[in-house]
Length: 235
Length: 203
Image 1 (cartoon, one colour):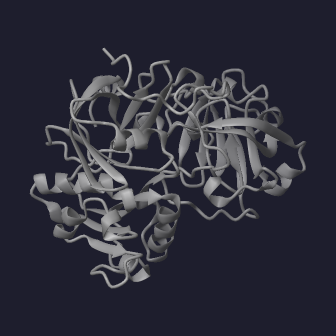
Image 2: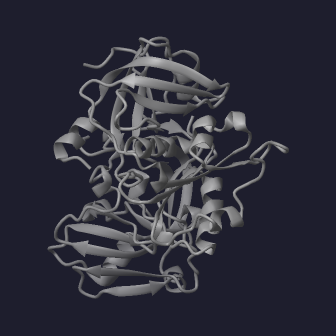
Image 3: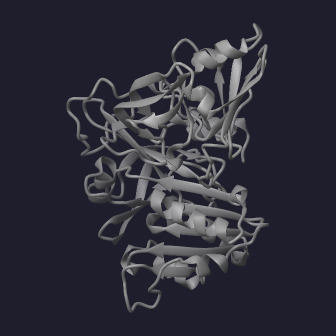
């Protein structure tokens, strides 16, 4: 996962230039950065973004990388939380050409090398690191190594819905009755994924990951094979 | 170098609460759950904690036995490396000092490793858990500690980032050398002082 020099370099704050800004949904922004002296990430890792006010006040948040390591830019998916101090700024104010302080890539636990089979389960914006994994699998010519199941309230609130659909992910939309993928990730859906030999990457809210853990373990997935990235209310 | 300011960003708080370490925000009444592993179900009647390693008398306690020892309350703030802080909260349990006094600390002991029922580990200098700085706790704000927050019993080292406070603690091992734990080998800081922003490797 990179030597100590890479790790030091990753931890250093640097100014990254925003190259692209997209608003795939009303409550989301995708930012693509050019990061100087970039340390290549592993799918699943995150970056920290820090905002600095004129009086020196700072606020920082972590966001999973949704791009593949081979991408020239680093892509972060940000869910806009209405009272979120950082996410509202990123969603409402940031434009291409802006420079933002970032550090990363960070984290060496919730990472997938792409060399072994894996199972990814994501809820809402928790699909972002899984999309980074999916894209990496595609780059390696082995998208089949990663099996995905994702859930969101509606298709509009499922980040990267088209890409996930095209990849054959199991999709469950919990509040869109009549839609193609209406339903939830229930015991049956999870049991179809279980493989005791395979690492599971589970990302989403505390409530979502808690529910999925129970289904996984009940279906025979060993608890020790489940890697969890949980997020709570972090605006 | 780093941009002087972020264009158009003023931030929400003009009056910064002095209890908040740099880069932290006040989560208010909430308490986010952050765990890297599946949440275990630990039966309080079967749970035990052991203090071993460089001690005179390695000892194991049940929860019932811990409750017979003098209780201790922590009232104050906690800080998570993911940038939330929870201010003015409280926990009830027992001071780690009580356990260390019971087992007898060997003079060469300088570090500890906390181990959870899940196998999660985290390392600390011994001095960070003695002298009234660390607790084993089973109540939060008067209620039994919930499973997702580490119940039945978790470690509490509130002056450091919260990953140093192992959930579902089951063992404290005293060592003469530092042994990096779960997050510490995965890119996080060895000590984790929020006032120095010791979040990651190299901070």
